[in-house]
Image (tube, rainbow, N blue to C red):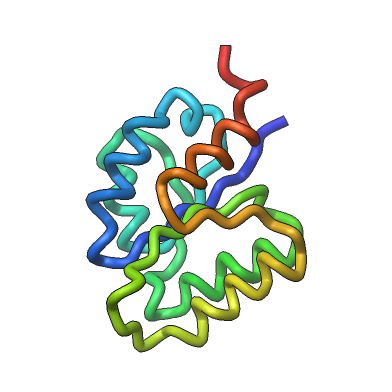
Length: 126
């Protein structure tokens, strides 16, 4: 059974996300990937298919949060810039609240992202 992983990265973390995806491509190729718009365009460059939503500031975080609330997301990896100010901070907080409410694994750094991917997808990699 395929798992759905959402990938989100603030502008200052997009290069980190691409490197993370490349490091875990053997796992991620087995998953259905969803991403916010700009992050998704970067991930497409790795050769993986990704369902791109709106960019974060335009509502992409909210779209992914809605998918999580509907049980359509198995895990979210969100590389946030903890030092930056973000105009869509309420959407970011809402996404995190939805993950807590619906018990959806949420990683905000590569270490926990690896644990989520390996935990959700290890049985699918041969």
